[in-house]
Image 1: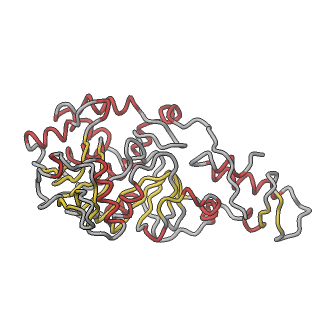
Image 2 (image 1 turned 60 degrees about the horizontal axis):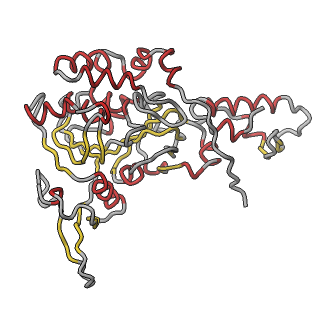
Amino acid sequence: MATATELLSQGPGLTRRFIASMSCHSSSQNSRPAGGPHKSLHGSLLPASFLARTVAETEVHDKLMPLDEAVRRLIPDGCRLRSSGIGLRKPMAAVYEVMRQRKRDLTFLMSGWTEDADLLIGAGCVERLEGSYLGLEALGLAHCYRRAMEKGIPRKIVIEEYSNFGMTMRFMAAAMGLPFMPIRSNLGSDLVRVESFLHPKAHILEDPFGTGATVALLPACHADVALLHAQRCDEEGNAQVWGQTGDDLWGTYAGKKVLVTVEEVVPSRVIRRDPNRTLIPGFRVDAIAEVPFGGHPYQVQGCYDVDRAFRREYAERSVTLEGWQAWADEWVYGLEGHAGYVEKLGEARLQRLRAKRFLSGRVNYGY
């Protein structure tokens, strides 16, 4: 039988296999006193109550809800919305749902956007942007963004530009309850001089302690709602992320409300067995939606790889307005929510994307 560490390290779905395997092993140990401890094959003592419980028996709290309900409850028109994930683990299922509900006049915040912003711009959801890079990475320009900026199609938008690092520091200030954050990296660039709609967008200050150093003070960047896609969380919202996290810690804490989408919801005991992977504690989370493949077409470490063919198709079809509209009708508006999206992707495609088994080392949390 595989050890708990091995099974728990394998990502979505395997938590249930771990619990099921332990339950099966438990049932064969008829000599064990009822309610007494159970010594598993990997040497740890587990109470019988641990083995008896299953995922199905876990109490579901009010935070756990369908994605469409979470978006409807938390994201009003005109709010300041933060995306998440830099180059991976983007909250794409939530982005698609914002499009379906035709939210309007959003101020979209992020230190680096790709399809997440391009889609919302193309759908007419965004009025303002605060951030830095916006493009399709190796696939070239973000065409909806370019149409909106150059031609006002489907609507005119404005952007207040900062560097990637500058946005991270702005999120950090908001997360820490500070009005601003000092940095040096933007000094001498147009990023602190050219303003769009924030006045001032930065303030240059000489060190009041007499060193003669100069810094740029960047204002805190608060979000009304922060989106986060994570590998797993429990029913309280304790969200665990592994792999590259970017500025998701500070960016999520910068949100007044937090909507977490996850590959799977697991029992709290799974979170407690590996607490250091918890990026955001449950008390900061307002809504949870379980959406397997919710980061597609981006990769989610331990779950699935990037769907390069899907991203390439989007880049090619979005070059023209008509092509983008046809793509959006096919992949967003014409589907019954996330379940319809996953069904359209098909099992063969999903199987090709599923992550290979590459386990981390064991960690002893004991004293």
